[in-house]
Image (tube, rainbow over all chains, first blue to last red; front, side, top):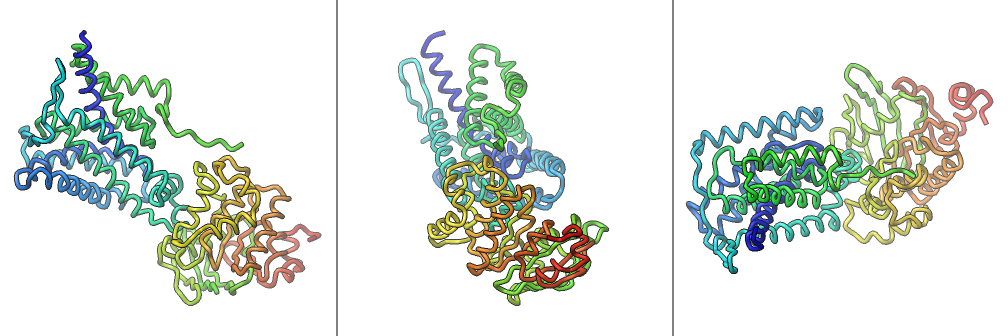
Length: 293
Length: 235
């Protein structure tokens, strides 16, 4: 294997990992605050793909990008209001089942509205620009994905750790009742959490689909599961953990494909999950319970 | 002034609080004492909006609180120190205090210093994670966090729970001090002896009803209270 081939694949892996990382953040944040796995998150990501297709049919790309992000956020907030908020006092399992229901609803809705035929994802020339270094050729989006992911993660972690909003989010994730006594509007904080998660999923979908060219109603289900795995590998509830998990899953997938075993690349993600769960059940950076001394 | 009238709370089919009425005049310490399951905590939780009351009324300086959300109620300068302390374990002592002042937009430095003045031990442990504090220190932090909201009325649910007698004494001294600084206190306690000693006025709750009331000292001398809550000899 030549060095340039290795480098090429590594860049592809980082790029895919970046997109996975952005989606994984949505799983991990929602889990952090509601203690539930939002199984609809992958399908929200798929819907963001369709939003882009239809928005690019009308608007130029620089309006489409923010428009898609806003639409995805609105979709995420609407799902939370309609399917999760009414179950706030219900057992957690009910909310999880509701999330699975929303997932099927979105997939079938997309099937009905956009047909099951794969639709071609609009190409943004500014993202598709190709750089060539010797034997390596990479598109701009391939380089942009990991860089943007790292920047967004740093910003997000700063917000969570150093702002009043972040303080309220951390308080809600630990103890919602006490957070209420402090005057924190828990429902608003949950809405904001969904908004951030879905906004990042929209960015992730633009990075992901620009490299993959087509969207179909089930485009979100397997990447969604993989990003959930990424969040678990990183330690669910932990934002930097989810990002690192995303990169691990993305790089491994590309590495296995590059080694010629592409048939096993999906299976490997889940084998990885099993291994991590056996060795470190709370994930690489999972929450450790504070011990009272 | 906090006025509770005909408060009824149901859990499923069980009536936890059966139409109680009491008042907490401004600037006083009032206490609800009684055994486990008498409905004391439920009463505080209903005042704070954490549980729904079936009927009745809770008025704070004439403003009806029942039916409002917790996060809205605490805007009216009334707060609760929850049973079991409930500090945020992964955050530092200082961060916990700042969360207590979530609704305030003014400078917090003075309030932080006031809390540190009342609890010098919290100042020493300012950068420590709250989960690593001892039970007594966590209770102090829970009280300090409540004070950060600059409340007019502070309600405390079992502040002595699970603490060593010497720490309990310390906490009660602080409660008195907070009251002297102008805060109205509504205290719920199983430790009737301690509570009655600092209370201006006290109510005894049994099976969801108020069965006796009087000044703290009257109840301390009452033979029935002595027999039921203080041990036969009193103190």
